[in-house]
Length: 106
Image (tube, rainbow, N blue to C red; front, side, top):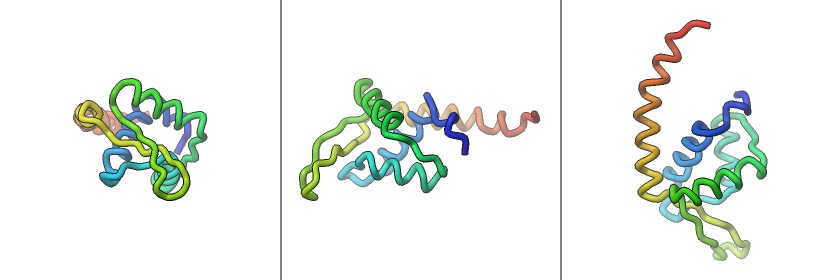
């Protein structure tokens, strides 16, 4: 998949979805990198992922906390109710846009 597609609302939707699907304990940045590579074949760099996570947190869509349980400090990300509501909106919009896009011929 083309890395250029992973910008803006698409990346935001993917990140919100991954964080939403994570266990109740949250998910950390390296796990997000891994899942994106496995699902989409795209290797995001830290300079792409972490600013986007900070942006989502500043908007109140996700929250983070430090976890020291594994002996190594990790920031765990959790989706907020506001983030879940926006994700539902994105799903509704994508259900309309994707079928219309697929039927278009180049």
